[in-house]
Image (tube, one colour):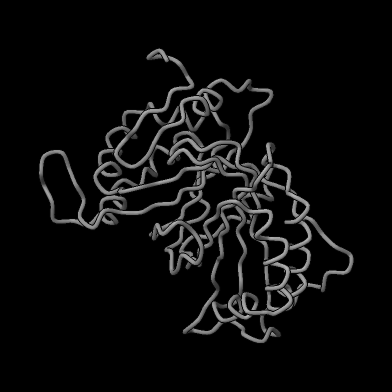
Length: 282
């Protein structure tokens, strides 16, 4: 594989770059281009590792210094979601620290930002603080509706409304399906499961913030992903009641587990949450 072959992958300290997807981002024709949501899973070093040997700050603090707001503004991008990870319920054992979503106006604008001098100056902090990251490019999926699904319930009327001690949580599902080529398609087993789960979750105040089809993973560990789903619940306790519901559990074993070959499921506490409105905007 030649040095300039777009199919090559290069290692950086916190992951592997997929140059084939990078080429797609850079060369999408303007008429076919449009917004892309970059979904970031982040795990920090306990202590930031700068090349000059300096220390004294955590990986999280280094990432805070990295936050490239000026560069994002310059290309018309915006952070639409930022959350701390409270729990990782399903996955391969990686305990992620934060999840962020940045909406870029076009795929090309993501590549343009990488070459900006101000971004490159900031990137030293990301390199120092990040132990591992997965960055998935997503585009919104239509959320299926069912005529027999219960109507949305106001959070004041659910069994476990938000309180000062247990406020709203966002549950994110990063999904890899078995035997699926197109990430916009959902296996039939998963469709059966999500229909049954919605019957339970809506009664407990579920709000769908956004579903995304994964068109590529620009930085990761080589695994392909198919969909990322963000669900908001009025409280952690409300979500856990859904998890423990017997009917949902029965459908999980029969249908969800048959459809999914790999996943992360995490409970998040958001500090920025404009995800739903960012999907609704043109």
